[in-house]
Image (tube, rainbow, N blue to C red):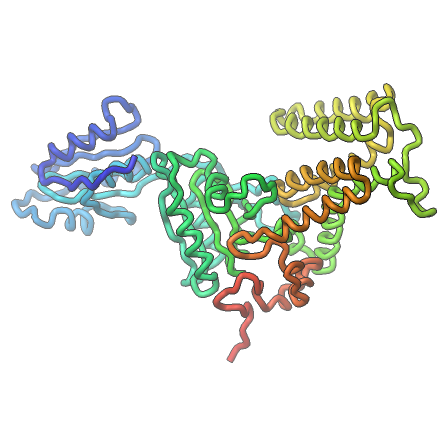
Length: 490
């Protein structure tokens, strides 16, 4: 918990008593308190076992053993930092409360007798998994590295791709007890200052014990909208995707413990883009994008539209005369859809919790239960299973997992509106849906831009994959400081 400032005392015993008590050394087996003495100079080293590099700390102790006895102790701290501790990341603190927070975050603290400052040695080495390609953002060609749960690694992966001197990585802590590391990243001469300040102010107003859900907690604090299922930020696990958005003028938020970066601001269309489109030729990328758009809108509107035709609320033209139900089954049509939707959602949840070795078996069981037995016993009609399967495939073709879940909720609402109110009810539900999306303005940017408000010059980037040499301007809605991506060479 946050406490008042506790000045470092010149008496090592007082410092030791405070740090030992606050770190609960006698009750935490992983907190190390190591008493040292080199040439008559008493020291105490505090660290968390498992967070520090053993080799580095051993080498530091070897160097301290070469200290020469001296009666002049006024500049001991400066002497140790400049000539005796062979490490790059060194700092000092005159606040014991801050020293406690630093030790629990990973750095080691060296307390020296007679000194009013404590040396902080950042030798932390968090447990981390190897860099792997993200499961949900895979590409056929392209980088295979992805973010991990350690914020330092994620920032390094981003800096590797953007070596601009204006790239900013601003650090803060969030969480009264967890003291979670959070980083706001942006390019200073590109990003909109108002958006950057809005995010900083939002983080400063987060008052909570900790961030167990990491970036998701940050999103809910910054943007609220608890009843709105649509994602107001975009998540990415790909460093190259993060770098692209930084260069466009977006702001990224990294949270320690999360393998994803938050991209702010974002629009509805950002959730329909995928890195694979930019790894192929523009024509191929455009084809992928068009198919993806069709898939998403099929997942939203196919079932309620077919229900209107099947329930004879709409009369199909002659060339669509095959639309309808030959055998409706023993269960009412709307109930079939509701049962099937719940069944698919159960299968999705079961797949998440099923070990990969059993995933194939789960798929076979689902195919038998829904595709065969349910039809044979008359629970479902063939058409219901067919159209629901097409809609489900459209949901899974959505690049953003969060957007697919939101669309699934609205598909169910559209279906209920069509069943209860017929064509007028369906149109009313779509109108309400559009009004809700139009009213959303995450970080001040309209959610449906450039469709609403309409911008002809930017609509082309939505529906086709524009060649990179022709993408010379950054998005107008971001109101960036440097709108030109490719300035003319003078």
